[in-house]
Image (cartoon, rainbow, N blue to C red):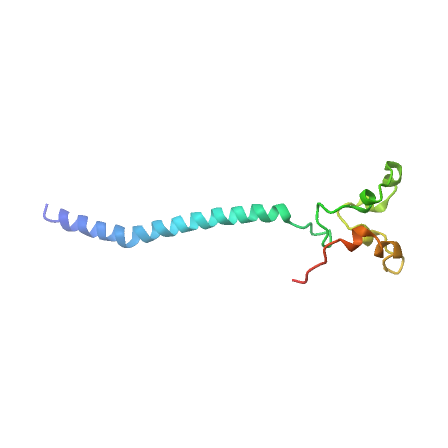
Length: 116
């Protein structure tokens, strides 16, 4: 029984020396993971679609601003591809923007691409 007291003292010392830092580290990891998950959820709410070339998901589309009738929308190439900005679809044969796009409210109010 003479060895019991020193063994308990050694185990207590090891627990304090190693167990406490491991517990604190585990707590910090748990907090940081929860914080990261919350930030990811917030970022997902405002994420820009990768193929939208800077157009937000909630952006007004040209057929909405021009009040196009449903019959015209069905034959519209921009309506068929709502993930892309309409001015990217209505380029001329040489790839230039149409004059009507330059004066359009949807084009002028679209967010600009930021170089990352």
